[in-house]
Length: 81
Image (cartoon, rainbow, N blue to C red; front, side, top):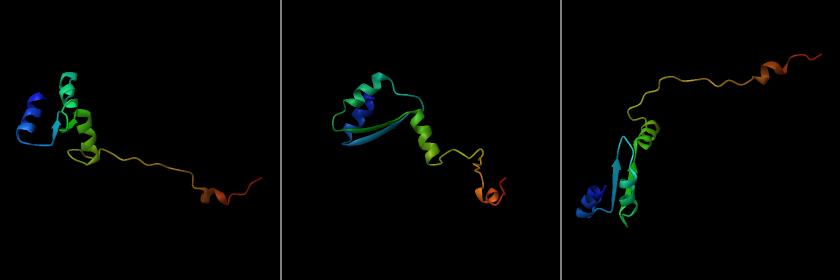
């Protein structure tokens, strides 16, 4: 994380995005949270998965389902005793 921050600052960047398929350790999050005015977006494996599903990147629909409800028009004309 520190090398990433140094690289951003060295290039005069104001923001950066770091993506991992794993997770960020506390040792990595500490310098990220103390990066001052540098805006860092950290995306871990869970966040990456959510983004992939949300934007249909690298995923495919495996199945669909139906939600059914009672058709009151069908039963509305039934005679009652």
